Image (tube, rainbow, N blue to C red; front, top):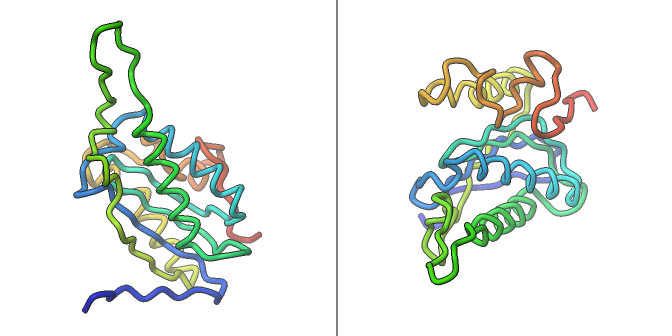
Length: 177
């Protein structure tokens, strides 16, 4: 079974997607790396025109809840996102004094070929119940992993939008649009 994942596009569903860093290494393990990821996510969202309904950025994986873009499909948008993030984080280097080797940030310790796992998990969200379930799962992820005590304490997620109607690090698109 070479290609067991089947993608269902073109039905107007929302998509809950999960993708991981190569071998689940924490390449998004710093504030700086997660902030950079969110910034690039916003750029790719604008360029491809998909709606971002929810997200969480973890040290070694990401969950997104998004719509299909008007042109293309979520696979293409995620390909662009992953390429831009890996290029940006690989190219970030600390300034070193002359005569010393440049040190890479910890999140860039991927080998030259691999930053992300090749595939991603995609689940079509077809009901309000599934939407709530996926948002709850995403927002609880940092708590379950012991990174914070409450979802409100993890700024790299859409929790603040849903809990308090507050803007977070990136604009969240309401489902009703």
